Image 1 (cartoon, helix red, strand yellow):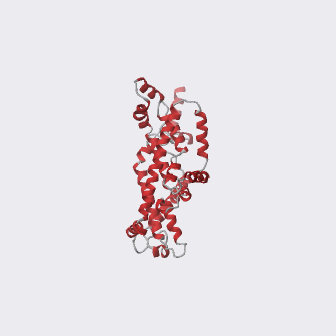
Image 2 (image 1 turned 90 degrees about the vertical axis):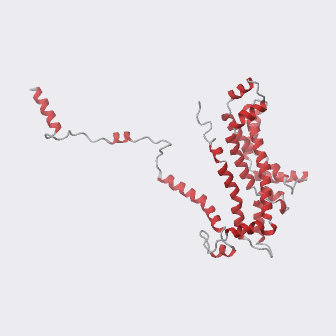
Amino acid sequence: MTTSLTTAAATEAAGPAGAAPVTAAPSMTSRRRKRLPHTPLSPRRSLPLTLVTGLALIYTLLPLGWLVINATKDQNGLLDSFGLWFADDFNLWDNITRTLTYDGGVFVRWLLNTLLYVVAGAGGATVLAVLGGYALAKYNFPGRKAVFAVVLGAVAVPGTALAVPTFLMFSKMGLTNTPWAVIIPSLISPFGLYLMWVFASEAVPTELLEAARIDGSGELRTFFTIALPLLMPGTVTVLLFSMVATWNNYFLPLIMIKDPDWYPLTLGLSAWNAQAQTAGGEAVFDLIITGSLLTIVPIVVIFLLLQRFWQSGLAAGSVKE
């Protein structure tokens, strides 16, 4: 009797003869469990975040697109055509030629001045930041904490707040209206020093330095052969920040330099823009826009060339062994 009841129950659960067994529908909980977890390689899609990123991209690229488009127009085309579209005539090459030859080729002189300030100022600031950051990270000496506090305080002080005291000091020394008035202040980079301090603390293992010293390597040899290659990503990052800051520096040359022969590009283009507002001055807005485009090209090229060195250090110290 018991065997018959069990057989009947199994027959009813299986359904009619020849039909597949009836299985329960998967619950909502089991469906959620089957979903793959979100990882950095397969992130969760977010529509609001995508919209915000798209707006940021438009905000960043729109001025650059406007600059490229209007650099192809002549003086009349700038005033008669729509700002975000090309004019009937394509005058980019003619504008470049006129920009480089206008007023006796003064734009080329301003470009060379800017390169001088960048090579001497930004290059020197990078060297000092690397040496100082490495020393503060790997050597113990009296007053180390005080130096740390001074560096953090200097990072918080804006450069414009120091411009007038710097001018008064350089005026007493007779260095105003000379390239040194721009180069010497550019050598001081508190942010670069702090960045190299933090980077050297993580990127250069102390055990590796101690092993080199045990093998008889001197401090200079240890730095150049072991530490400096490990510091290269941070060095490139500090160099890029210093170059951009020096290349776009406007306020310091404005108060330090009065001779147009020593103007950087930022101050020179501002002088071209101001001459349209003076009596009898010539309006050269097409040359100003073309010169602005030529000004940003070297920075873009440098960023593209040094990108692999810069990105290689973004994850340095993120994994602890």
